[in-house]
Amino acid sequence: MSNIIKKLSTSQIIILGFAAVILLGSLILMLPLCTRESHWTSFIDALFTATSSVCVTGLVVHDTATYWSGPGQVIILCLIQIGGMGVITAALAIIAVSGRKISLKQRSTVQEAISAPGVGGVVRLNWFIIRMVIFLELLGAALMTPVFCRQMGFWKGLWYSLFHSVSAFCNAGFDLMGIRSHYSSLTSFAGQPLINLTIMGLIVVGGIGFMTWDDIKVYKHHLRRYHMQSKVILTTTFLLILLPALYFYHCECAGLPGGTRFWTALFQAVTPRTAGFNTADLGSFSETGVFFIIMLMLIGGSPGSTAGGMKTTTFAVLISTTIAVFRKKDSTHFFGRRIPEEAIKNALTILIMYLVLFLTGGILICNLENLPLLTCLFESASAVGTVGLTLGITPGLGLFSKIILISLMFIGRVGGLTLVFSVFSFRKNQSPVRLPQEKITVG
Image 1 (cartoon, rainbow, N blue to C red):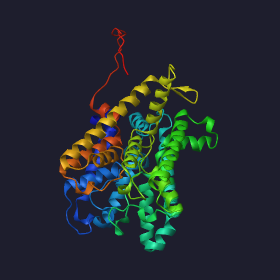
Image 2: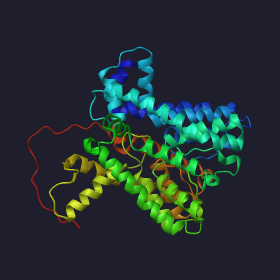
Image 3: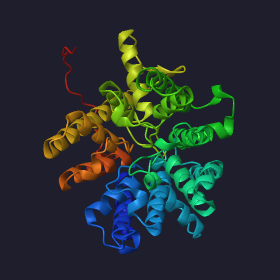
Image 4: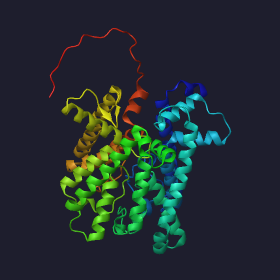
């Protein structure tokens, strides 16, 4: 077995790691112990739930609070935690605790999994990630405890606080509010500042990426000393919260009271990238609002984070490249640093891959289920962006539609390029010979 693992590429190890955890979680969730009615769950429904948990998506075919028992909810939370931290990060922690030596191959795998710039210091960074995850999730739970304990009693309030804290930090979007109304998410807390601020804070911190955390820890308020990637992530994240919040406030939440209107607009600007909670009835949004959310879901969070999607850096590179073309500049740059051509090619490739997956998935579901196209595209974007927001059609989908969403969730979490690189063995052509160049007109 060890010889087989040594022959695998880092991309293949990441893919197989996620697949193994999903399969194990599926088999456990099938057991009668995991449901409130103590009956067996079908494999496809267990697989869907396990995939959604490990890929920190939040789409569900059964209401988490009313269908799954206490043990089932614990299993789901464990899968969310493993998926949010990353299978490789969790595995490295187990290896380190067991006292085994961490090989160069394992360090290289961790480097790719957390988007670190090099193998040097990845073990230190891994432990920093684990400590920060535990601290922030416990802090989030502590902040929400007074609200949940007051409404639900002490022990149940503690469980709800911990569950929603982990789910928010891991950008999963699973909730236990189905006890009030099935699939209601956090709509009953739309005007509650403490819950809104805590959930939004956990989503943002979990979604900016582990390398950005490291810059914040090392350089603190000296923003100029941050790595260029961290500056791009923080700037893009700020704009992708501010501008959508202004749109939702003025266009989609105009009928709400003042305080509730503010919190609802801000929350809906944060959660589409890629948390999956909602405090507003998405069914009441206009088609423009729904399409706006779809775009935010496809962009997603930042690399090396608990979030999915194309990533904020991909979006930023595409926008900057477009501006450079408009201004007839030779290169794309951020903060006085030029972006490599390879990064631009990868960004364009990722954009095309996500658009193809998103459109293909939505169109197939539309034809299979005979549902409105925009609604199906919304679910498709939610799956491939590992968001979890829904317009309510997922629980009623057929077998093939569920398989489509499962595939999109998996690809969205592990990354399209990672999946492609794990299937094909690419080698750079070392030959100095290059084909003749000829111009082609575009645009």
